[in-house]
Length: 201
Length: 233
Image (cartoon, rainbow over all chains, first blue to last red):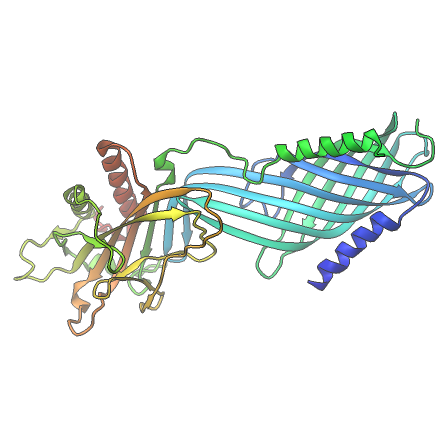
């Protein structure tokens, strides 16, 4: 619990305290592929994802950023048979997993400041998991918070009054007392507004 | 004054957020998609590793009355229109599995007795968390009880959580229970249940549709319990 507060605080500090040469924020659409921890439960690619994110350039090469996202995984399993110990259950299942990552990010920017800039990044934070399995007339729900690590690679294209940003992010959320680990690979594409005083292109 | 670009950004974010739903599979469910079959066996009688005492059972009896499980003091409004159909389906499956019906149980005790119970109820936004809600009737007390892996009975109550009523279903449950007759002790008000099948679903539909779903559910409860079938199968 304390860790969650610390990381949330770190996230807010990142947003509020950072200042520098360029500041950007905006949103990205996210497509995610389930990986270890999810793909035994839901195998479908998620086309429902959104991130609210931004970063602040500290100098020519480094930036710190933040991200708050939402990825929805879902799958319907028709007449699935589930066996656990001496119990067998058969019924149509609807499986849902909602993941809400909140990350503080560090970015290493390549290229020149006014040009196309690939970057390497790493995020740390928390992910809220809300999952639900509907089986027959009943639902099984699970909720919890994971500690999350999220390395990423991306590229920023300068455009009028901002950036078009694309990234590939692998998010790994560790297991908790009640929940197993979850991980997914997301492709993110969006637009970040420039809010710095430095003239944008 | 707010910058227009902030407003545009916020508006776009809100629109996109609305497009992302927590539970996005939006289909018109048919009633049979809500049907569920649960079976459970006593591990003292069967283990997947090899032990199967169900093979020792040869004869069965089915009481001619289906037990209606209702709350204490509540009038029984459960229809008996499907009783004979349900009993027939259970009998048919047992015969198919290789058992013989004992027609004179008073003279020659059968190996197993299959009791059938029905309960109905409303499900209001019911949440079923990590444990399974077993409805295991205690015949004398008329309350729900559950069987733990060691074969003991504990009182158990349906897991209703009033977390906001967003939908309501009328549900029906058929409970099949197999008792080992040789272990019945008249001094104890409990039956030694060794297997159970639960067929649960939303009520409604025509007689033909309902019979079809009942039939499918009962057949499924046997077919997903292959250890019940005689090895000659």
